[in-house]
Image (cartoon, rainbow, N blue to C red):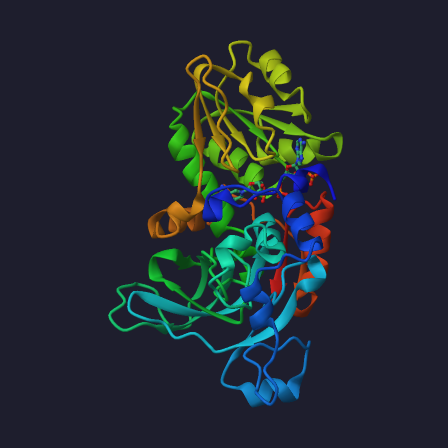
Length: 378
Ligand SMILES: NC(=O)c1ccc[n+]([C@@H]2O[C@H](COP(=O)([O-])OP(=O)(O)OC[C@H]3O[C@@H](n4cnc5c(N)ncnc54)[C@H](OP(=O)(O)O)[C@@H]3O)[C@@H](O)[C@H]2O)c1
């Protein structure tokens, strides 16, 4: 497991923090919450509410009307992901329902799978379905829901997962404010890479509040958050210094960075070489934490992605961002759609997988080095 994943936490989703390593050792010690173990077993003689078999058509037929999703009945490694059968959701007031064709695989999903915060699930029955990005066709509008979206529109949504509600599902009901049309010309697969990470960057730029001409430094620039950060910052007239491994230099240059520096713990020194007074702001998508502080000028601003706040120093302000606070910002999501249509944002798909192969997608993500997003198809 790369060190980056050893520090994987879920504060932007649920608040608080716990390392992947801590979680893993708890699971190894067999301390899976009792509620989870109880619900994971199928009562004898009863049709299971959850079905752990892959592609079992007969069972699927019997459980109809329902839907397939990918989730876990017991927390664990990638192999814990299974096809589960769930009742199909109904769009309630203020909601719409999407027939999901594509769900992006994000780092946070691995925390839902592994049980990074078992305390959060102790009163919630499994299966637990990850996924914060969905795209597909709008198929139902809840009663009294005010929206200009129409049945049959191709749409994308940010999903805030909870229990068995997650984007790795054939169907999902979400607030209408979490949904926008798919960018014209983009497939559902490509569109699924945009909502969650695009809104994260929108939020980070909003809290940093930089003016055109000011300097933004970005870590993890080859990744999903970092890549959108470089592109949106350039669109706002910022001067962008971004990191890259030698293999990613061209990619990060193509994304629009003005200066590309070598990635690593000496990020701050390299930013200072390019901008001796320091950057006005930083978006730290690589979770370098303390190592980025020296990159910002006195009274500069740092947006962090996993809750990090550094020591009081030189009037620097830390802004841990939580994308769920933008989950109902439909106009911001729709602006991202427009920016993708205008070529400001590039939707990068690394590879697609049938939903049944979600475990393989998680393995690849956790190995590191993927450029562009992995996407599950339903
Ligand atoms: N707070 C929120 O609301 C929120 C929202 C979205 C995402 N996030 C978090 O933001 C982080 C980035 O997400 P993402 O989707 O952009 O992940 P990603 O696509 O995997 O990108 C992360 C990038 O950072 C690079 N990296 C890893 N370790 C590094 C290091 N020590 N120095 C420099 N670069 C390093 C990775 O390279 P390799 O692939 O070579 O390792 C990768 O290019 C994740 O931790 C995610 O959970 C938080």
